Image 1 (cartoon, rainbow, N blue to C red):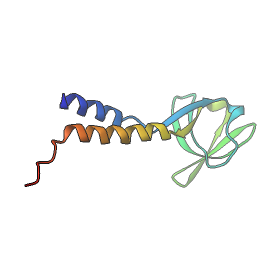
Image 2: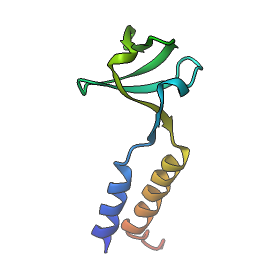
Image 3: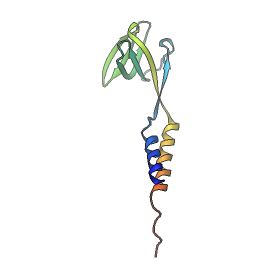
Length: 109
C-alpha cells in the first residue's frame, strides 16, 4: 500500500506545472514577454519570450539572444501558461503521501 501511494505521488510530482495552449498566429497575446513555443515546418521547436509580432514575423528572445521567425516558416504556436492548480495538487499530493508513508511518531515517555 505504501509503495502504491509513493508511486502515485511520484507520478503526480513529475507532471509539469505548465500548460500549452495552441493559438493561431493572428490571436497571439500582444503583451510582450509572454512565454511561447513555436514549432516550425521543419519540426524544430523554439521556446522563448515573445518580443514582437507583425504580419510577417515573430521575434522571440531565448537566453538573451533574439530570433526572428518568419510567418511562412511557422507550423504551430503555443502559449505557455503556468498552472496554479497543478502546482497546488503536486504540493498536496506530496504532503499527503509523506503523512501516509512515514511511520507515526513514537509515544513520548
